[in-house]
Image 1 (cartoon, rainbow over the protein chains, first blue to last red):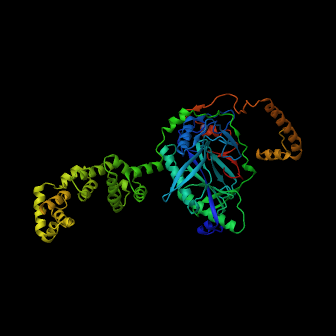
Image 2: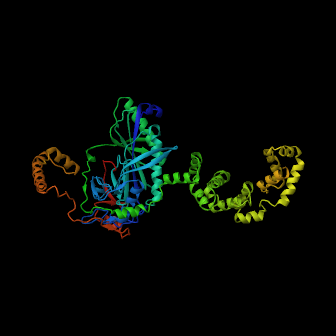
Image 3: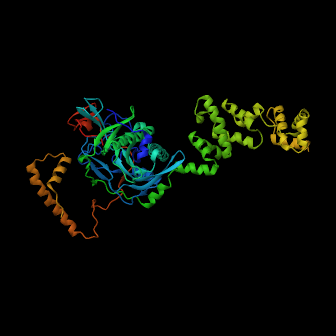
Length: 497
Length: 99
Ligand SMILES: [Zn+2]
């Protein structure tokens, strides 16, 4: 049974999409959220469990301070307020992925709230507002036996491994994202991708989507165009790649529109994403079972981060990736197009290091984007794996700046670098690449060029200085490119004055 | 005054996986109402200057160092399980959905 879909452009003619994203980040702490069991991935089943994470009677949880620190740092990086005082809460439900019959989470007092992140899509910035980021614990893993293998439907019984139960999770929830229109799928993707960059920069999680360290739930609803209302949403669970986030949003937009167009109604439900076929299927309708009867966790005392601690943690934040790009562009004076090329090539870091090593931003861009990227493409490798370091690029440019070599000779220095012939200085010496600027040698070549091109010489004598280019070219050719072009020009003009 | 209806008791019983028949609901709903009213009378005593509290001990920020401590062995972990297989807890077929 396949869903009826409406063409994407037709969806936008009639409806405004609203997105919501819930991203779970598994922290990379050494231990679990509330006990000292290791929080590593891939152990033998039930080897990382203790009375606390198994919910045995009498066991008492104690909060992992490092996880709270990571939660606050994530919140600060997302421009959130940090609660002065907040509690954990029990989310009660009966499903054996939590042996306690509740998940320890936060309810109406999240540790981080009211933040935002700016997301770049094709040069346009969307501000994604963050509703909250709260602390909770991961669940165990179930294996369903009998019936259709691995699936819940038709399973005879289930086998549960609680190694993952209790690993610290931060759930980051956006407010409804409206106004993205046709870019809604791209905005969803860009948000998750840039959120991952941020998490990686913070160093708080491995943030591998393929391993489930970072999991996205995608909420989507459609409202009649320009109505300003919000429609009924569906929640597509565990969409585990950036590309799938984009595809899932697109698919749900097209599916919702078909139902609404035919006069039907969307039911609030969870949906499953199928990576292989690129469709969602109905999961579970919203029901009475979603009454989780949250109440404050009596076994954990409240968390009240001091403002001093919060400010101390703010001091540990890495520069926001979006702000970093904006700052570097301003510092370097790149055009939007130049900047986009640099970012798309992944050369922000190498260029930054090259500039730090003394090269101008334009020179650094020229060598990395024009010269080295071309060579990397020829060699079929990534430019950062080519084997030329930012320090070497800066050293080559220093030789150009000093007039020792020109750009053309610099290319031969890169040949030498790639061939492992030593430092740029050594290569210039060994290959005899230094530019000749001594007037004796240059003067002879200039005289020869004038003699060989009398008509050009006459034009210059008549004041047509632009014609000097032809003579400079002739001298450069004679000197096999190793002449100081500026000095050659001066000599020509002196001799023909 | 807080009052809990028979329907609410039935709903809570379902959520808590407690099987109550009609007679038990008739019997328990009024009793729970009395309990709620008794507890509610405490809030009548508290003045506006007494905030509701979930934690009687005025402690905050009790944190643990992020240092690994020994876990149980799988044998110990599974020793209380009614059934186990492949070093995992065996549980009845699940009709709900993953959270
Ligand atoms: Zn444990």
